[in-house]
Amino acid sequence: MDMGIYLQDRWSLGRVTLSMGLRYDQFIGETREGEVLPNRINSGFKYAECSDGMNNPKAGCAGQVQNWKDLSPRVGMAWDVFGNGRTAVKASAARYVAGQQIAVANALSDVYAMGGKPLTAMNVVCFPIKTLDISVLREILTGGLEKMREADVVLVPGKATKFAPSKM
Image (cartoon, rainbow, N blue to C red):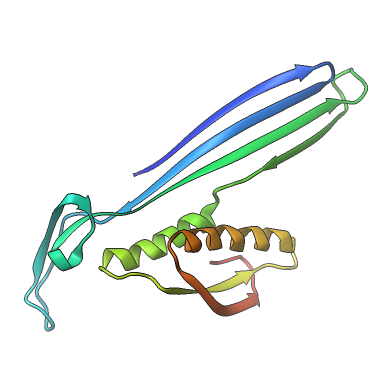
């Protein structure tokens, strides 16, 4: 189950308007009841739901793999320069739980779902450096690294290359 809640309010003080918000995101990865069909390696088996709700393939049951929660503050300001509503200076800052964190969570979830514990990860990045500022790449990699740290996964050296469109 994924969930996101966003609260925002706005205050006007003369010609300045402040906007502040807070977003809460929750990502719960899980495996569901299922069946592995017989093949040359095994005779097949069925995963039922674990009694404690947690994933445990060795016990032959499925459930919750991880539960990650994030708070993302956001703040914005608009200044009506001449007081006539036609010219404004605007600024904003925010912390986003972007796709890179979900991508890392999904990748780690696959390992947990198979009964493993991820120890290391390698990031291969294709990034359009001619069309996007390097700060965007820094934010993408930082977001992914946060999720790896939460899972106690060590990032090992990877490869970066110039490519369009970006991929992760």
